[in-house]
Image (cartoon, rainbow, N blue to C red; front, side, top):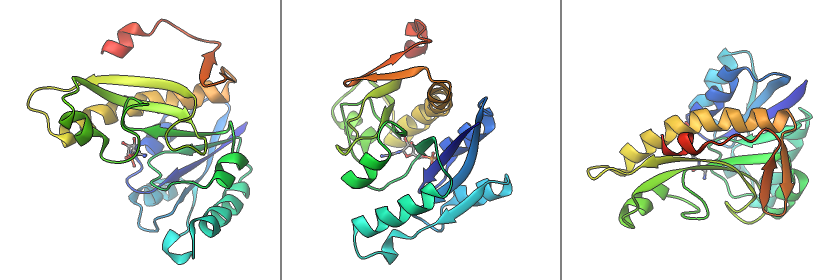
Length: 208
Ligand code: GAR
């Protein structure tokens, strides 16, 4: 059995998608947050999962927070750390500690639109598609090897919220699948590419 620790900052719908998928040989052993009021913490606790929050505002600097968070995470001996809407920039030390065993979901088609306000920026640029990316975490923000990407159309009357809603549905499919692929050892990192031993032709999925 492989241990998964999930980090959230808010609602936690992606965390819920992972828990609800019941991935073989995997157990979500803890859901942790930098935000004591994150709604997802209550949901996880109701589902019998250990939860804890470390408020980043209680720490003097980013390094102190990351070190405390690393200590907390490591109490659960994770095989995989999933950043599922964890809205903190991580220090190089944190990223190195979880190298090749920490993944993030980001609401854009990377390498376009790293950082925040991704859907509004896609709209402002006149993009006809948007989507989400799941990638390994490295010390460069939103830049690690890409595991999976999902695509949605941007329609003429869309607002950023409309796009976010459409993308979120794809996130809920893609993230549990990426976690399952990691857990079953299907992902191999070769430079910036992720090679999948169970690769299928998912061109239809990409256009859906
Ligand atoms: C998701 O859309 C995720 O892609 C995004 O936050 C949302 C969290 O929703 N992540 C980032 O922006 C990371 N930079 P959730 O709390 O309902 O899973």
